Image 1 (cartoon, one colour):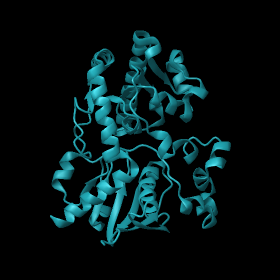
Image 2 (cartoon, rainbow, N blue to C red):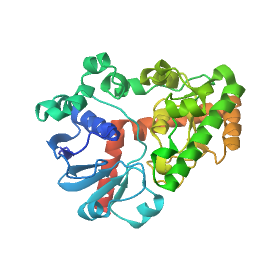
Image 3 (spheres, one colour):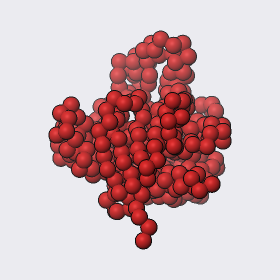
Image 4 (cartoon, helix red, strand yellow):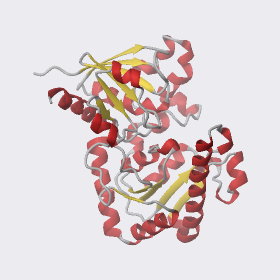
Length: 344
């Protein structure tokens, strides 16, 4: 019988982007498909980097919101797993492995649950893995809210559209390009919300997160705090069939797209064709893309009206999630890509 892959995780960061990676590894460990060990490795690498060993190979996982590659770490690695991986980089560098879509998700983890015993400064992080305690403390990013089984569902038969968002204050940045980027993102999120609120009424679940900046710029769209709670958002996801997502900061693919796939929604997104993803994720099969507010609205109307087309995309995304995005399946696919690269 072949021996299980041996995985060592060098815990370097509490960045919530790594919850999916850890959930996938722990899931595979608990069903005895990998042999898994954890080691503390604090402060050795940037906060958006994890180091793991795969059968003795040195592998870095880069979860940054941008397409930059840490050259020194790439040179040090046997393989470099990159979240926002450009197709152009993937074609030119043999050690690159695509990470694919990300969304925050948790799975039971005894090591991280008791991590505070090794280092007390991890108490606030460890409590995320205590279901009852994180629920009592109302921690939104925790196993009480984001456990795997709570974040996946079969496609809804409704015609409900969802697009909830937050705004970014441009003045919180010194670089002019970042200010401009945030202004464009904010304008699009506000305009799409206003139009869909008017056009689709009760068939639209929208709104903007309340903060000082959004209160000044779109008071008519502000969500009550209870409505923006993660639990409320997940309930809304499960009863929606169409999900809209525009680009995140630095032109990244946001977590919402992964959440939409996990719940079998038809996806409308800003262009994502330049990124290397997992599997056969194609336009008109898994998603529709838009380049303007007007185009976004027209696509929404088309999906809302055409039940067969919408349901076909929903079913494709439900299948895609269970093949490539469910945390355990994601990590198995990544390891298969590494093995294929080794054997080439």
